[in-house]
Image (cartoon, rainbow, N blue to C red; front, side, top):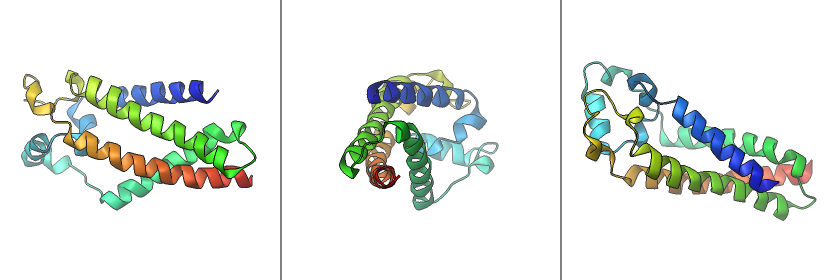
Length: 160
């Protein structure tokens, strides 16, 4: 059951990513994932630059931690085990699987090759989008965040 839930979660996540792209305004929400030259270009753009919103890395980490802890708690609630270790491992496997899916399928296969994520004026410059450095940084931050979420959710699930 954990595998089916994880696959469904990955597909929903991809759908959210797909629906969250396609226009400059939508793409601005994920600007931190873009290669640095694209970020600089967008921030210096007269129209898009003023629309760029930044949050601190700590606030982003904590908001993701809260979101995914609650989400994974809800998803794993009906399959909870008696002990902490089993609950922790179930949540960890689901979270890290989502993180790996995000890196391999969404970031490296789809994102870098789709025109949906390209900003106006760079549609015919795919080489600007090929640097995976920021995606890799996100993956490692996500690994830490999902580990922390698994600790919290595993503890809560074992106490319920």
